[in-house]
Image (tube, rainbow, N blue to C red; front, top):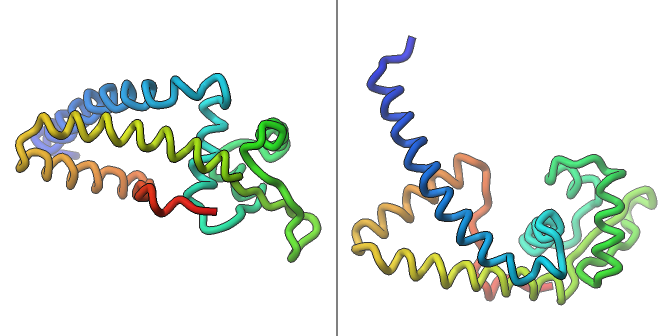
Length: 160
């Protein structure tokens, strides 16, 4: 049986993270709103994954990373190829596999949204005293790591 103090700490932390997640979700929503006439939110997530990948990604691996069925995902990729956001090509090592990569336009879209998000987050953090800023940064880095999220790349790291 867990002690009630530990559960209270866990509940308090969860409540704080939920509150912060609402603030972050608002930042995310504002940053993607200008591009939603070009790509859907799931398509943008594909572009983020591809922009952070070290080279082209196998179709099946990308579908698995997004927790979607490969057949359904094919239609998403078809629309993204038509839109000029991704490229699809056969895997030279296996004719049965397809490799997907972001185009320059796809990477630029991710860069644009990421920079808008970064500016807004920086403005929010600037309202905090330096010590609290450092604590927030450390806590969120630990949270992201525990969730299995990769660190956000520096904008100069985006390349094809």
